[in-house]
Figure (cartoon, helix red, strand yellow):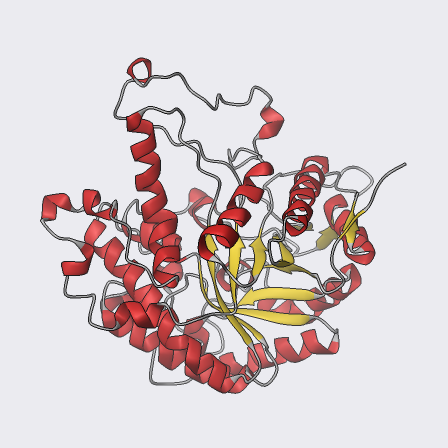
Length: 458
């Protein structure tokens, strides 16, 4: 007999997307250029020179897509708003057509009894703001508040769950440190740290604006955190783990919790002779603003990443590896990410016990597998079903441990543009034929439909 792990009655089941990854219509109806438009149009930046110009054409097909969400039984839909659709130059002139699109989308969701969860920034900064300095300058944080005030002033009566930023560490680190994402800058630690600070500052400034424009709402921010053990107990590996954790996770969580930026960051910029607190971009009162109380944290978590100090030869990095690579290829997704559901519990526990987060939503969790329709049209993505099932079992265990987990959003609702990987990776529970734009429910979508209906997982 199969035992059903039931979730709390008020647990929220949803799915997530992001504007640049699904909308298309990149230059239509007055939308301004974003840094991802410019980046993907630059040869060699994205695999196969793919772009989000059309993506899955959600801008024109949103009614069809919402009907599909309703068929699946989604209770909530997490989407992001494209800043350059609202303010083509980043601030100043308002594009009413962009506001009207999101207003129609929200109304359609509410008619389908699906709660909208809106992310204000999911990486598509207006290109004009990048040319004026981008996230390394304070004026971009000020512009974000202007944008926030405009869009929440229009939609705040209908949207009651707001997220300021999606994964600010990815914006800073992949945008300015390794160059994998727009704007594609490499090795600029100063701009990385300045961007991180201004992203957090813009969040803190925006929270009271959102609350004023959307009375009774919940406000939060989305961070990405994976389970990242050190490969061994050696000093070198443990130090590497601490440094990675500082730049990817603690920089954000410590500041949001009202603490100082991690001391380990001084190692990264010691050659410049600067400490983060000594640089002029951190002004008096900034840290208090960043620590403005919020209602929840959104957690994006996918995998385990074992941290090894690659500057030290492995045979000198004693004791031997604590976490050998899994021998089974099925323990890796097609992104090359290790499948390790237990790591999700580690991260959820960390948020709760170390940072006393009042409420947590898993805002992204999913896996990339390219299973295509068979001769009968069915998409048998059994590895994705296993991935989701095992992670939901762990999520249930977290709730049993008293962790305030309030909802789960699968990533992603649709196959879509996967940033630097273009269209080579498919995370969706809904298959999309990029030539015809046909949508097909995968086995994982039908499985998730049953989970949501039962409010539980086997």
